[in-house]
Length: 237
Image (cartoon, rainbow, N blue to C red; front, side, top):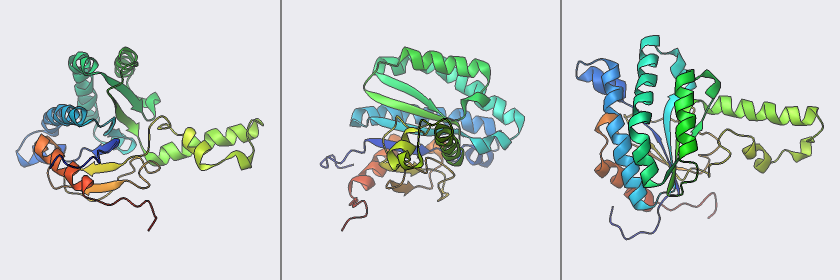
């Protein structure tokens, strides 16, 4: 990144793909790939704070991930609990605010408690909002928002004319987040995978073959540099 452009994305979202394939390529269990994926999270978070990025959203566990083997799911949540315990003090010291979005009813009770404790500890921090998308799927989010608005019509607090882009956005799990400016996907696949479909309407997309455990600060800076060189027109000439 050349450092001359003022175009710093306010909201960066990342699909952290490639952990399992990284491990399999090395002849390791998939859980080792997820363990290795923790360090790039720390690296990117530190770089993003330095740059002045105000929102970082990570696709941590999707609704579709519940279809994975139970052993892998248990390993993922055990890792999440471990890193919440070890990293929360440092995040708090950096002034990071933590948020969680998704169908949280499905999360293990001990993990949900740890998450809520961390969220409560960091609720007044202002440096950056780190959002973890957990048990998250954009289609499920859109359906949940639609049901919420329908209930408002049924109980008479809303009319069909009250349903606008603004009111629909407020009914989303991600209502507190701004639109995504820049979406990064690692691991080589070029698809969105049911992530933040409403929020990425005008996001710039960036795909890299680098698998998430190998994603470095240099890779992140190169991605942001690519973003800075683009001309965002939002449908205008």
